[in-house]
Image (cartoon, rainbow over all chains, first blue to last red; front, side, top):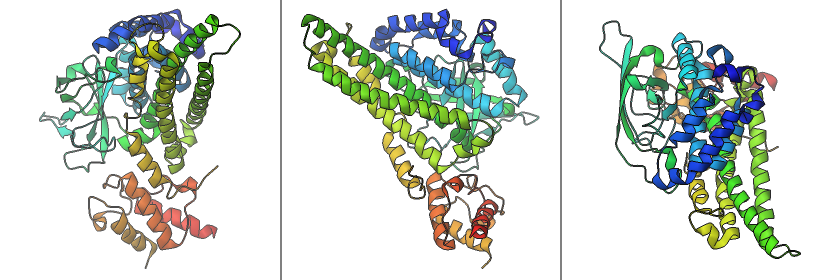
Length: 398
Length: 82
């Protein structure tokens, strides 16, 4: 399947009939996925058929070499149909980016990327942990030596408070302290395959929204080779890849939710307008306000995507670790996560009781519930506190 | 007091390391020694106060405040520019 995408220009990936098919399937199943809080297995299977799990992987390992702009478009289009599918796609691509950008020079990971492309493997992440208070940059569980003869094996046990699609993923990226004596902030990232580990579900996932991401807590126990530790400190991976990738791709997912709610309210206003030709319905004013918010977020996302693509490789990497960049990428997350709720709420008011009802072409309930997850994924208050501290030293006010 | 000793004193007071700074080499990674990003900013502020200078935005990076050595190099660059 990788051979068909290789010859295509990257922007054509999202026009592929196989990807369009995944979009249709995501749309058809979105309400059922939400109602039953079940994994969107049909749309993920369709994404696998489209080769989308390895779109980002470089050609030499059998992928399509897609960058964050193409992945952003794909996440947006998926989330417009089914936010859970869009978020699962986005999270998987974030994990792939961490490996691609920091570990390809290690033979184990080069082989892994080939397998990822051949088998369209799905990667989840275990960065959360009971007891660290939602701080990505802090771990309690540690890499421990396993008692093998040549000292090449490691083991770990981690109680992750949430692992999105944890029961469905093939592989897992886990943050851990470098060793049992390392500081909480001295972390590494370890990739384990399902054959390396056991994951026992320790909580339920019955949530307000994003129900199809199926993100309960797990207790993970794993034994694997020392080669499966990414060769760079997690601090570097977080700053240069995981955080910017997350905020940009998540923002696209949220924009997709907002776009879907907007489209529904726009159809509703058109319906009203047709019933009374000659007068613009009062609710059209709300639409105009919503479209301003949409445009603001769209342009924030575009400028963040462009900045990241300009800086991601070579000399620019240094800028990614500056206070100014951290501020800007956090601002994107805060702005997009708040706008999506506002837009969905306005859409609900436009559609009135047809929006409040579950089901039907004007229902906004699922979108509004999904949108509320945005401010909680890395709590906005935590980011505001971080930015407040950074503003003590940062001076550029351009 | 030599620059690196002054830096070590500021680190001791503000970087909130998990270990005693006296036990660290000049090249030791302060992040690995437990300095959080919040403490990193507090360290920057305290260094600006101690040395009477301002770090430009381009220097506000984790790699510049990575160790006693890198901080000393940054301070030297700024002092030479004056």
